[in-house]
Image (cartoon, rainbow, N blue to C red; front, top):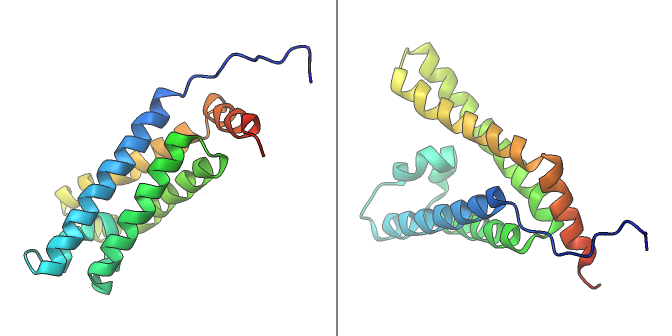
Length: 149
């Protein structure tokens, strides 16, 4: 115990709440899209922007990704320490999945593709940068340190 320990409850950063709700909304969208693919209403390619080439694995991948993203959103809201790291990894995977589409858009001079996939890369980098902020990292570490084991 330190003399300088702050016993007041720490307030969740607003960006964490926004990221968590974005994850939950994205999860709902991907789940509904997967259900529509399963029913044959829309094609597999309808989720290509978010899932990339994984859409060829069928509607099960839509539901699996929806469950994983919903779990990440819930974990971010709960303040679990590992959720910040998983969020950083998920954003990095979003950047990695955007490299090929933006490269082909540049080669074929498709301005819309450059803008869309470039926006995805910029958003993912912003998420990574935010989750690496000292205040956010401190909130996650203080949140998990204060929970009883």
